[in-house]
Image (cartoon, rainbow, N blue to C red; front, side):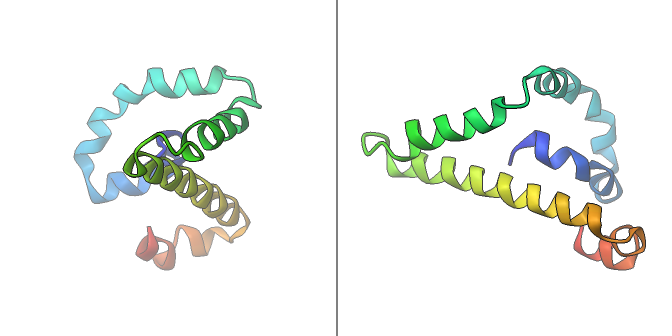
Length: 101
């Protein structure tokens, strides 16, 4: 799972597993490095991973499958994040939102 995409859901994870909040400081260097990258870097990363790893038949199928699944999960999380910003807060942070998150 891409950490930089799932971090926006960390508050919900803290409700499920409170001990994770104690380990939050371990992610600060990683998220800081991601934040300093240029805006086009994640798009370039996607194309390089797809063209350089997924399309190469020399790599094992297991590795290529999991790279493409990670990329698809990242896209799905981006869609969910965009949709959740459009939803009213009562739905996202209410009982319905807590049920799904």
